[in-house]
Image 1 (cartoon, rainbow, N blue to C red):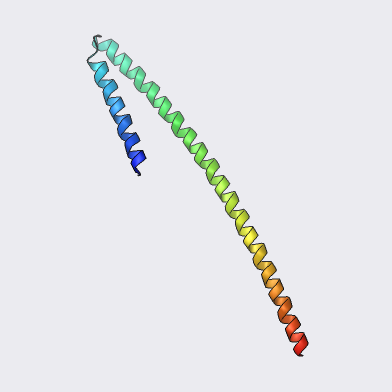
Image 2 (cartoon, one colour; image 1 turned 90 degrees about the vertical axis):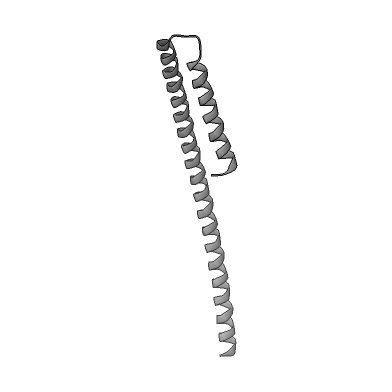
Length: 100
């Protein structure tokens, strides 16, 4: 986990803690406060789930692009290697035929 990820997790944790403390000390009765906390938690959960799913889709698309690029490069290298092998084969045959 890099520094940015650690900072983001810490910032989200601090934000959630601040919201919870603010709601708990707010001048509302307990029933209203619990409803508000439940509503905020549900909203946050949905938002986190949406962000997670979007990230998975983006990572999947990136993985597909990387795979496609990798396979393209492998095929290019394979074609070049085949051409070099054919060229070497032709030269060896020419040398053998000239010396025969």
